[in-house]
Image (cartoon, helix red, strand yellow):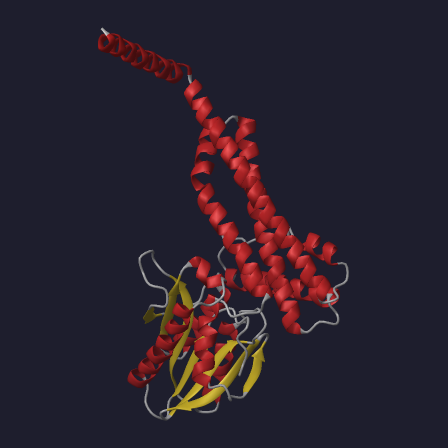
Length: 371
C-alpha cells in the first residue's frame, strides 16, 4: 500500500510539472522569467564594467597629477569621448591620404593636449599618459555601449537583443578586464607583447647602435651583418608609441638608393594574434607587410617595395589578444629570439654580400629603448 501510494504521488507531481511547463510555454511566462534572469545578470556585469571604467579613470588622473598636470580631471573628461570619423569610402580616390591626414591630426591633438597639460613632464611620461587616456576612453565606451543596448532592448521590448547581449557578455567582460590590466602595465612602463617587433629590431641593431630620428617618433640605425648593410627601423622608445614605420622605411629606402646602394630586401617584424591551440611565441614567415595598421602606413611599405621591385617579407611572433597589450612574458621573449634567427636566415638566403637590407620592427615600443 505504501509503495502504491508513493507511486501515485510521484505520478501526480510529474503530471503537475508537465502541466505547469505547458502553461509556461503557452502563456510565454517562461520566456519572460528567462529574460528577467538575463536582464539581472547583464545589469550585474554592467555594474562591473562601470567599476572598471571608473578605476581606470581614477588611476589615469592620479598618474597625471603625479606628473604635475594642470587640471587632470578636465583633461580626461575632454578625452573620454574623443572620436575619429572615418573618411568617405564611397568615393575611394585618395582615401589613404585622407585617412592618413585624419589619423595624424588625431595623434597631433592628443600630443598637444598633453604638452599643454603636462608642461614639466618629458615625452615618455606624456606618451604614457596619452595611452592611459585611450585605454580609459575604450573602457568608458564599452560601458556606455553595453548600457545603451540594454536600455534600448528594454525600451523596445526586444527580448532577442537581450538574449544576444547575454550571450556576448562574458567575452565583453573579458575584453574590459584585459584593458584594465593593460593600463597598470603601461603605467609601469614595462615592455608589452606588441613590443616584440621593436625588440627584434633592437637585437639586430645591437645595444650600442647609433640611432637617428628620421620621422616623428621613429628612429633608424645602421649596422653590418655578414657583409650586408642593415638599416633597422623602429618606433622611438621607451615612449608608448608605434611611430610611423611605413613613412620611415620609405624615406630610408629612397635615401639608400639615392646613394647608389642596392636595396634587395625589406623585412617587417610584428606581433600577430594566434589561433586557439597555438603556442605563444611561435614564429611564422610570409610575404607582405606585417603591420596592424588601418592602411596609411601599410600602403607605404607596399608602394615603395613595388616601385623599386624590392621583395617584401614578413615575420610574425604569435600571441593572444590579451598578451599583446599586457606585460611581455617569457614565451614572447623566447619567440623574439626565434624571430631574430628567422630574420637572419631570410637575410642569408635572399640577399648577397654588399646588398642593403631594411628591417622594420613594428609595434608599440613602450619600455623598449634604443640601447
